[in-house]
Length: 95
Image 1 (cartoon, rainbow, N blue to C red):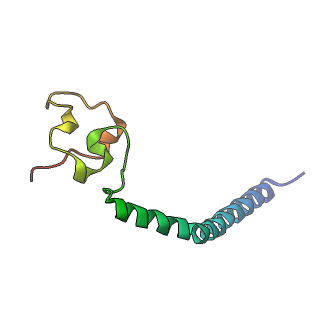
Image 2 (image 1 turned 90 degrees about the vertical axis):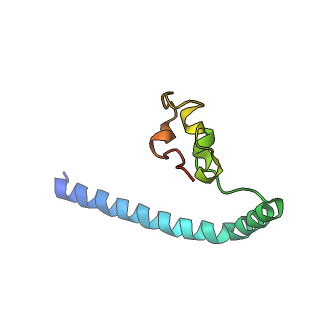
Image 3 (image 1 turned 120 degrees about the vertical axis):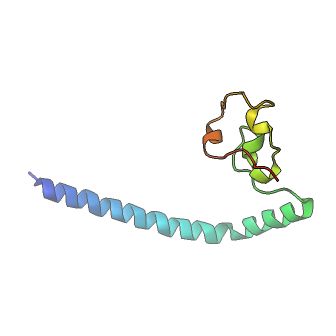
């Protein structure tokens, strides 16, 4: 029968090994995916694409620099917010 401390230490060691493996795997994958990422960056530059989209659900949460002032209120200021990302990304301010 194992003591509770032995079980805890073995689970802790297993967790640390898994986290270390994840860091090593991420480093290997990023090195392997670098040519593809550079290819996508060149394509985006050639096509003149806009900034990266943050969210896909509402016009004003896709990217704050690409939104207008009243789209956050869905065409009128009294409308309720019904997209979850609206809680994290405020409507654009006055310019």
